[in-house]
Length: 395
Image 1 (spheres, rainbow, N blue to C red):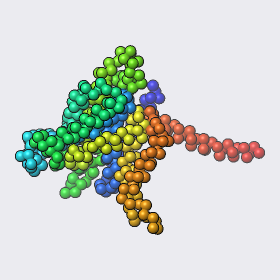
Image 2 (image 1 turned 60 degrees about the vertical axis):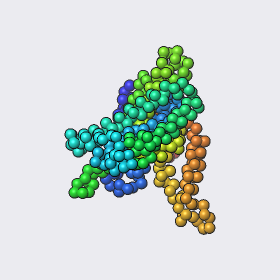
Image 3 (image 1 turned 90 degrees about the vertical axis):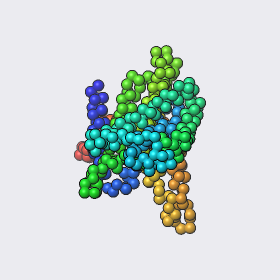
Image 4 (image 1 turned 30 degrees about the vertical axis):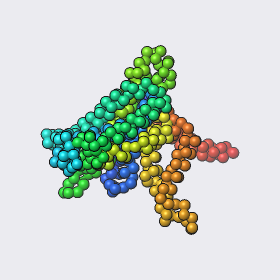
């Protein structure tokens, strides 16, 4: 018990240190830096991957509907926060739309700019997650009767249907059809402005803070009695039912919780991109999130977080030079636009072949354990020369 408390304290200190580091980086490097861009996007994808891991890795339900739930969350957040004064311009093809209020603007008018923004964004993200959860409950009633590949196909079909549904012109007064939703509160609104210039950058720090809070909640759920029931269902449904676990209830609970946090991730993605449109939420997005889960380890929360950063960093930043023909050597025209994807795919294949259970498998990163391991390693290295010197003296 004492060891567990020390481990939890070390992990908490590590998370706080990481947040401080991100805050410092945000102040000292340009806001357009690729590092900050990768941190933001990987944080959002980490939350989406952890929410998917809760369902696929910890409950054993193979679902491919994550992009659909993220789409719902993104649209709900955007719709609820477009200022009334801007709705006529945004919904120009649908007579200004039917919803004529903004949660953030409304709370800012009552509570002030800063408090209203914080509470309005948090409330909007919660509503986005709840709406995604309601959709998951309705979808789960028929599809959770399926297992394995059948469940995957059913949830994948739902994601595609919901994407087409939100672009339907009949729903245009609410969703703006196939047009962009824009001008809603985004991450840049958290920056502190003084004299017409940004004095303190907070967009990246706020985003990571929200993501960390959500992942900590998911971790608490996994370590609770509900989480142990989810794992029992994953390991053996017959044995779990014999132990008195209500399979239908716990499967639905896992499905809805996963959809809730996917909806929150969708809302954060809307804030990051500053616009919302249904087209980007294709099947490819779900496959990317699934790939992150597989690379990190099915059944590992920290694995999903680490692999999200590796995936986004490699695909968006580190391998960019492979698309530039100017780096070709001699007459070999190997490097050209699109070659980055080839190398990235090969790298993923190598990881999957040599790390079949992912980078972390079912393990979690333990900062206290890592510190003890490093201490033992360096202690042995220091002890070895001392022993050698002592041997020479005796000789």
